[in-house]
Image (cartoon, rainbow, N blue to C red):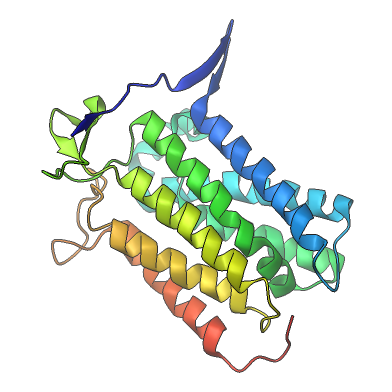
Length: 260
């Protein structure tokens, strides 16, 4: 059993300005993704320009933040935020939905693909292998913030989160950082290193992420205001992952019309 180190959610105090670890983790994810995209483009038959990559990351940042926040508000706690509208903008306190962020990025990539003439899946397949960098960093931010912890466990790896009570819990944030961050990155990077059918890399991302998320939800504490949606085990995270898996599987196994 371990006790959460009680890291101050604020990384840097600069007078009235506070820089939160959660925000820094997002910065790490975006910078890491930008660097890896620049690295990837050097190995492609139709390389991207440095400015083009920078523009893509800019649109993705807007999609992640706007979509992630709106997704959390609409999927997980609409009543609270509709009665406290000013807190919609308190993104540094946490409260971001991956599924909402994914929708935001999809919209951003569709817009970018149309503007550049590359097409949606050409952009999506280019971006998908670097997304786990941001996912892993974000889960570390959740761990520092003592949020989204797991259910009570008697395992020796259990962590006592003071914000979650005196009992040891699954460090589900770290499970997700390992699966959605490290494992997903390695598999996608390897898979995308060879020419694949258009949409296949995006499909593998959706399939693997939804599987990892679905599994971790079995040991992650459901949101208190939502609880289980059905069967005494189905959570909102699992419900939202089902269409991701089905669409990803369709992308991977459909007859391709165009290859990378």
